[in-house]
Amino acid sequence: MNMELTQKQERGFELLTKALKKKLPYITFIKIDQIGKYHIWIKMGVEMTRFLKYYKVPGSEFHISRGLKSTKRYFEEHHYDDIAYMFPIVREDLLDDFTSEFNFKLDDIMNGLYRALPEEYRVNEEEFQGEIKAKDLRVYKYKIEVDVNGEFPTHTES
Image 1 (cartoon, rainbow, N blue to C red):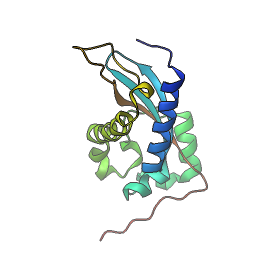
Image 2: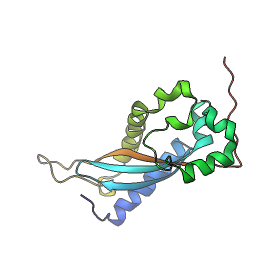
Image 3: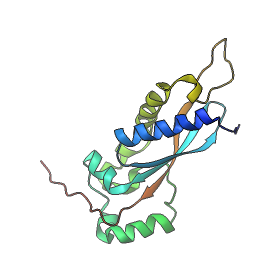
């Protein structure tokens, strides 16, 4: 079920994006991929080095060994241009920390901010048992962006 958004609903997503960027500074954009019956599927832009620094995790050896310019090209040209989970950018021993559970936590953060908006700024389901229920937001895909002027964070075991 796809639908046109009202001006207030579009403004709601602008406000959500602004709040998420403030809370999670590695987010570069949020875009609705599709509106389903129960969920709004979101595509989210993530700047890789800011993500790694925010979570204080090392980058993948694959990307560190190739440098930021090659990594930027990799995400622009290869099969990871749209990914469902963030694990391809972190060191191999941390892969499990950035799959489904990570997405669920991010969904919870987004939904908390989204539900705080006035009802007219949110996309709602049809009336359900006498009440209007807001659709849940779900991360569908990530678009990885790489700032070639940044640097991979350095990490020490402590």
